[in-house]
Image (cartoon, rainbow, N blue to C red):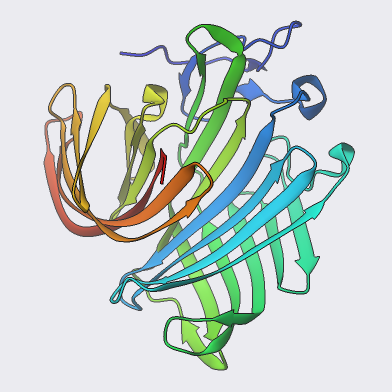
Length: 316
């Protein structure tokens, strides 16, 4: 089993190499933008919200790559696989990055331009999202999207990891995923108000990286549980009722429009069908619907159908 970190420490050494590779039950690596600031630094805070009863998935992504802020609003109709999105960006000064350094501290993020406004406020375990995209054409033909959503992780553990390229520890990534989160609120599709259903759930992803490539990674949310997995093996885990249960290495195999995922100790069996996908330069994200089973540390086997999630991988 991979090394579990239990003590807070700086992310980087004095020479800007990764200090300590491993995983933790909260983000125990202290990230400093000033210390990490070199060419190729990428930062993002992403919010994934799925409502099976209402039939949609939304992704809100706040990202900074070098001197540019790049933000995404994506709305997916899960019954048809059709989607709508808004991409927006603007040049910023390095010291003006709107993203927080520490994933656990209270913070406020705001972004505004003609095509969208986005705000995320963290207070304690709760995160408030305020989103508007007045000109987006949704899959059903309605124009405009507004969202006011509150997410809450209720103080449970969050899987965190730091890892580096095998032959170059100046190329590293720091990642934390909080999931599953409760989700409450309202969206306006055009002028039509839609309250999130009791089945709505969500995840928050914090990512700070100097990796030169995209690694395959996936996140799946079910009832009371979530699975995070990918090439960055330190993130491979089940979160069940707020507690992390670590997994071993995972293998993802693409077969047509399906993904098959398995774990080295046979604790996971997942088949994922692609709902829809989007590509951006050399990276693709796919929204997926999953069925399968996983074995908990206590030996309990949990079977599931129609869980939803997202997978990222290199290539188009």
